[in-house]
Image (spheres, rainbow, N blue to C red):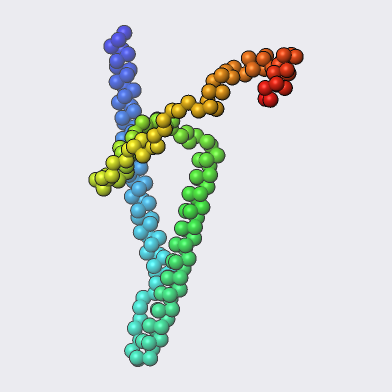
Length: 183
């Protein structure tokens, strides 16, 4: 049975290859026909729009012909410029619309940024490269503060928890202390 299945598979493969080659031949002939048609269309257009050049014999007629040709060249140049500007405008509009469409889809996801721990010196070296010569130790210029026990700090430590302070001042004894102590 496997040999029959292999024969069928080979026949199907051969049939596909044959159809493929026939399709390629047809496509090649169609391309040739299109090329011939384009050449004929080009020749017809040139025959219709570009008449054979007849040079006049007198100088005045030749100058008239030159003026007409210059006017025609200017006209064609203006048309070319206009079409180029229209093309640029439409391509810009297309880009803007495609950007708006892309924004409306909302498929753009910003990648999560990683925190990089870097010293100020390393950051300046990365930004400035070899130009960086100044060592920037941010902690060197900080003001040194000595811890001194001031009266306010002692009072704050003595007061301690605010709940204790409230409990001490509550009731008649607390009011008595407030009047006596002048708090």
